[in-house]
Amino acid sequence: MIRAVILKFEGVVAHPAPSLCEYMSSLVHPEWDFDTVVTGFFASRQSWDSYFTDSLHAAGVAVGEVLPVLARANRALAQAQAWQLYDDVPLALDWMSKRQVPVGIVADWPVDAAGVLRKGGVTSQTLSIRRMGALSDALWSMAGHFNASAEEMIYVGADYGSDYEDARTLGCHALLMDRLDEFDETVPNVNHLIEIELYI
Image 1 (spheres, rainbow, N blue to C red):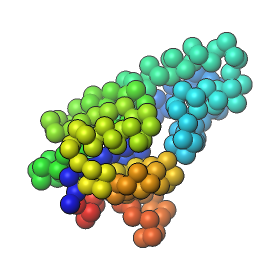
Image 2: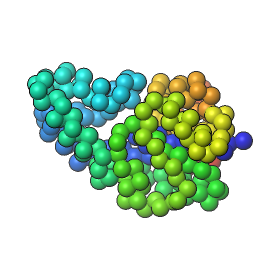
Image 3: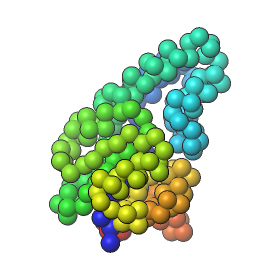
Image 4: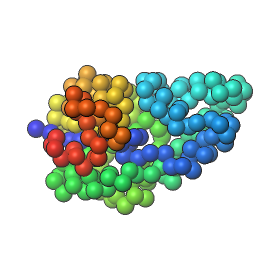
């Protein structure tokens, strides 16, 4: 029996707005591709600060400028307007709310996830939002909050390694958000969040 659904904020619930990507590039240089940095981060299993710092060094940012750029980037990431909900999220969250399925959202970045949801018209009071750190810490925190075991939770992530495989290792039912339809049925996946109803 599934007692709670845990969603990864980045890549499942929301994505960086174009304005955020432009701003991030302006911090480094115009050709710097923030989308590539994001993709690499999700697959890295490093902390955001560590991975972003390495990316800045690789991009040639002067050593004395790395920490100021990191601080400006983190302030930008924390703003609700820096993110856009995926179109299918409000419908899926409404479906789960009506069926009284508790939902937790975990974020890698220090983002105002509640603000992003409100901006997208989601006002459910049944959501629990946590900053992630290690996936294991986030899942144990959510398990305690929802009084559920790992086996009673579904975790939906956007990266095969750091989300799907790690959640399975921790004993959760894991689903991969596969919006680009890159995986076959050997990996439990959904192309739209509302498809989660098939697993509850």
